[in-house]
Length: 193
Length: 191
Image (cartoon, rainbow over all chains, first blue to last red; front, side):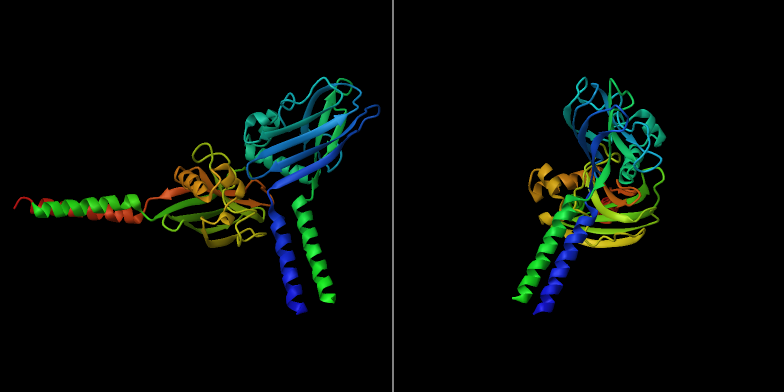
């Protein structure tokens, strides 16, 4: 009796885990923090790339800047993961609709990265003027911790706070693993009783 | 007179038959669309209009990364260019070879079954499998669909096969039959 149940449980678990392996939204998150002495502020950024439709969803909130906002971009890709500077990948002069002239705010916008206008022309040019290539570059760069979201201000023109983005393990994977583990636990409880 | 009528009837039947053809065949050759992407192959997709069954016959090789997913995307804004969302089952075709640089995939799917669709595609196209299917087949016939293989190196898809309708062999055969019938007629007519 025990063996088939265990097998079923293991099968269910493996199915659940394999299903999560190839979802097509990649979520990146980081806290916004000052990297220069004298810079102030905090917040967070979530960027979600959908590799099926080539969209980028940007969600940001921040507060406490020493200057007021002048621009915000995604920069990519630094030479080394997690450190250094890189050029602007996304649209200039700033993300459409990003709150400027303020020390705190929130932002939520989805960009169609199939459009050349969603990119910094120089970044697009460096990627063969091919939006597929440009998108792939940030997709790879962000997975390798080589991208950061930067908020520029009147006091720190080069950027007052940054979020060095890192891949968030899929919520789906967490949930499914939890479900799978719960299932296994239930099986064990049953087996004992 | 009777012969002429019978001949005309046979001819019109022969010519009208292709319009209600049962199977529509689509074909595309895989190629990279991003610079640096590699790989080749072919995708054949047939749609049975009586049973609403799609049959996939796909083979590819030589991708730079290993496969992470495969779908049919539909429907691009313009024929034969651009990107579109996933129409078929997610996260990938069940049974499609993953973590490899070459492979084959042969399968059939009943498109009356919601699980064989991306639920978002159904939602965006009328909310039922029937409405989704109508949009999908129209898009396929209009060259606005592509079979996409995503890999570890090209997340948005390393190779794509933009699907085109294959002229039915049966259409050609029937047309030839009809023409032969006409020719036979003309030869008889002078008597």
